Image 1 (tube, helix red, strand yellow):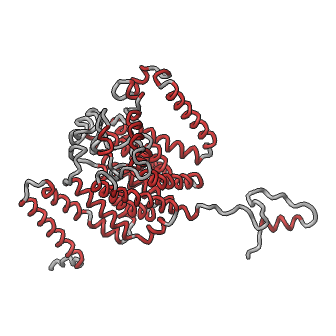
Image 2: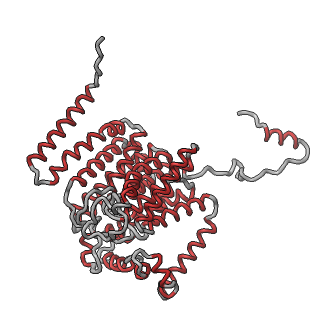
Image 3: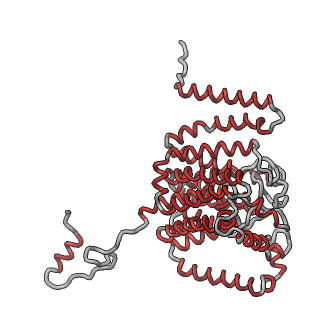
Length: 497
């Protein structure tokens, strides 16, 4: 008895033929030009694009699972690094090309859902964020590095529609799952190689990451610490939502693995920012913000007053400072790992172009005159905004953050508001939502903006006043006198309309 063949649809046959032809052409190009690194990378890029093609088809069809997978892949590809090269080297290679393919594919998927995206953009968080990104793109016109500034701002614009499409398609659990998958693909291998090596590649020339700090699949310990913090939060948040004992135990183990990875990076700020974000969200949602707010303000005021009047060294024992520092030197803590040296220089450069800034991602040129060491950004998202896009771009950025905070104050929701608080707190000492090129923090912040825009139409709570102007939430007095029993019965059993 003969075996019946499988009938592939014509579209699948054409897609497979095109993929094989593209792979053959890429192999031929690599063979003809073996001394060109970009040509050698083409076969790998074509293979990655072909393997992600089914996800792309499902994205165009609006499948939720495809958006979860695509967001996870985007988070992984954006921050993973498999080679070492000088930070000042902005040329194209196989890794840049692979990221570009994934970024462009996600951007196209977001554009395909433009009607849903435009509904979110019409709300204040959406149009404020888009205004900021358009000013960022325009800043390439006066940037000292126009090509790189345009490429970086175009990458932000590609992320924007996809992030809003994710906000429209995914619920909270889907978002947490995408975070766990994408960040876990970096965190878990990084932890696995920790006993043998601090990274899969050598330290990039010009990098400030010490060789004894874990960087794993990233190019610097700080990005790994940020991803580990996000992974830990995602796993523990999924554990709270899960009811199965086995899944809860597995998620707890994974969360602990993420915390250990973050500690091995010796980077304090991402971990502290995530812990503070979760505590701040929970305390506000439980009603403790009235107490927590003034206490935090008083503590922060005392710390700033001590530093401005006499300096930390006169209040804290030097042995304690050396204990909590990475290098064993108290100067690391006293200078916030050099940030108190970087920030005055950044402020001076801000005054050179206060209204329009120097152009997005122009840090390589702006910080050329910074003598102590080589840096490419201001190590503060808010100073970096003023430095890159001036007041013209910083105002819409702050407007976006305030719109998100308004939603948090009115209707706190996780993970939306925890991602917002994390971006704002980590932005005090890092690039956070304003890195030169998009990062996982940038992508998740954009998704949080989309979630705030999605909730904005219901931002105004219905009035508690009834037709007579009386607050319906207040207890009504029990009627007394003649006919009182009829009024009570009418309230307990109202007649249908």
